Amino acid sequence: MIEKIRGRIEESIQVKQNLLNKCLPQIESAAKLLVEAYKRGNKAVWFGNGGSAADAQHIAAELVGDYLKRRRALMSLALHTNTSTLTALGNDYGYDQIYSHQIEGLCVPGDVAVGLSTSGNSENVLKGVAAAKKNKVHTIGLLGRDGGKIAKEVDVAIVVPASSTDRIQECHMLMGHIFCELIESAMFP
Image (tube, rainbow, N blue to C red; front, side, top):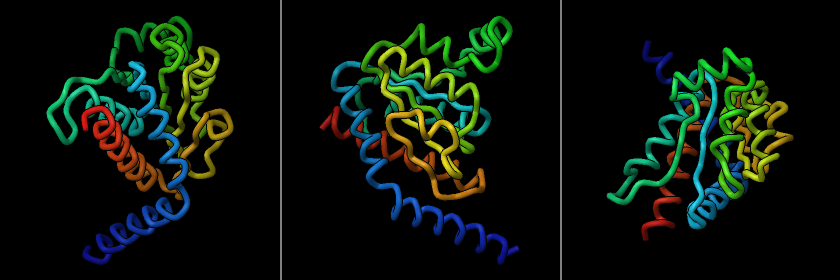
């Protein structure tokens, strides 16, 4: 067991080292988009599927609540958390439109939509990004593998240099926490 544990920790360290070496400019660009949006009084919406939905919800909660310091709440939404909305849209429009329809109704120009997809090919995330762009909402993709279709559509694509879903999601959470710290520092010095 100890060798399996050691192997997983070493693998995680290597993926994060690759993230550090390959993705710093993209992480900074995404953080700047988020900080600028909050300074203008805009909001961020987060969305994904499965584990990515859980990560999106976690990041949104850190912004509404406190991250490292007591402060006023920031407007941040995880688009999958309202089950009535999600199931109604899935039923009436199709699962592929559960995010695009919400973005159309909830976002205004200058907001930021952050789609999480380890494959970069989740159809509902891709359609959410398209709806955001149509509505002049800035877009960020937290992606994995080769970035998939979503990488070509977002304003800022951060593609975790890994192929395993678990390591990609670990990096998405790391970036989410970095975003929270940078936003909080900028908004509440």
